[in-house]
Image (cartoon, rainbow, N blue to C red; front, side, top):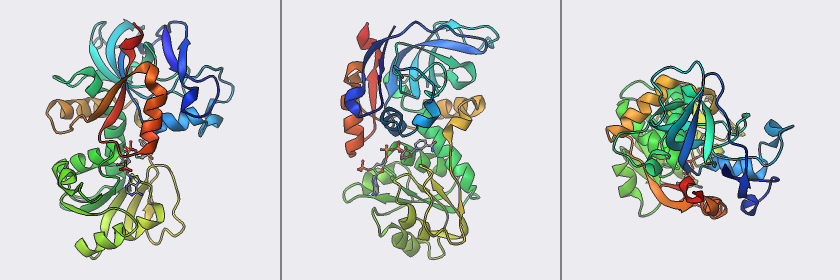
Amino acid sequence: MRAIGIQRFGGPEELVEVDLPTPEPGAGEVRVRVHAAAVNPTDITFRSGGRAAQLEGRRFPLVPGVDLAGTIDAVGPEVESRLQVGDRVIGLVNPFGAHGGSYAEQVVVDARSVVAAPAGADLFAASTLLLNALTANLALDAIAAPPGGAIAVTGSLGAVGGYVLQLAALRGLEVIADAADGDAAIVATLGATTTVPRGDAFAAAVRVVRPDGVAGVVDAAGLVDAAVPAVMDGGVVVELKGQVPASARDVRLAPISSFSAFTDLALLSRLSELATDGALPLRVAEVLPATDAAEAHRRLALGGLRGRLVLDLTTFR
Ligand SMILES: NC(=O)c1ccc[n+]([C@@H]2O[C@H](COP(=O)([O-])OP(=O)(O)OC[C@H]3O[C@@H](n4cnc5c(N)ncnc54)[C@H](OP(=O)(O)O)[C@@H]3O)[C@@H](O)[C@H]2O)c1
């Protein structure tokens, strides 16, 4: 089978078409014929070697990619009957694991990381859901604000930020979201209660809305120190890249690892159902042929996207 992989860590140009043996599912695993793979920031880290230590001893080519959508084409032993060959599914694959990532025609995945694709959505759109909705949900769990409480979000037009807005609204939270000039209206449609200008003055602007600060901030833009003053004493700061602010005051840092929840089947199913219901919109910037993966990585790194870039893994066929 064909895949997009790297022969060494490096820039986007290292993403090339490779031939790999067709993987066989083991106990508790299914094989998915991949239709679409969303391109996420973590794929850039994987490609560039930012987490090379986790791949020590593994042989190249290595295949990036976490989010996938496709159809099941083989079911391993000891898989529950809810999953059948031919099912339209979405899933999460850990590219640091033995089977590699989702930029491949066929991927073997832990059955607990595979759920029915949102009804009515095409598979390109469906592939954009799970990683970022899951991350947003984990961030809100870490803050654990009660209904009626307030949180703040940076990077609110991004994939994680957008899902934080929607999931927070479902929890009955007030959400103060950053927005660039001209983006306030679209951020409001995603579920923000109030928008404030994005950038270093973010925290001061949040304090104008909530003088005592918010229960927590989800810092999807990576402002780090500039985000911390938005939070009330005793509140929570969620740094998605694991950065540690120089001065954390009396706030709790909550690093998030979405990989740890990849097999939370009940949560993944619920997120897919919320997308079916329209509560979690699926935002696609553009679908590109898989062989344009390098271009997709360049464009993601440049910023300014509205929605996710998606690779079409059917273009090899
Ligand atoms: N820990 C985990 O398990 C986990 C899981 C998923 C994601 N993440 C991380 O979470 C972060 C967000 O992911 P994502 O998929 O949402 O990325 P994304 O879709 O690229 O969104 C990032 C958003 O931040 C905005 N932004 C960038 N610089 C900014 C600044 N200085 N001030 C305000 N906004 C700024 C971007 O706007 P422009 O495009 O207009 O610049 C974009 O809207 C990434 O660092 C990713 O690696 C971590």
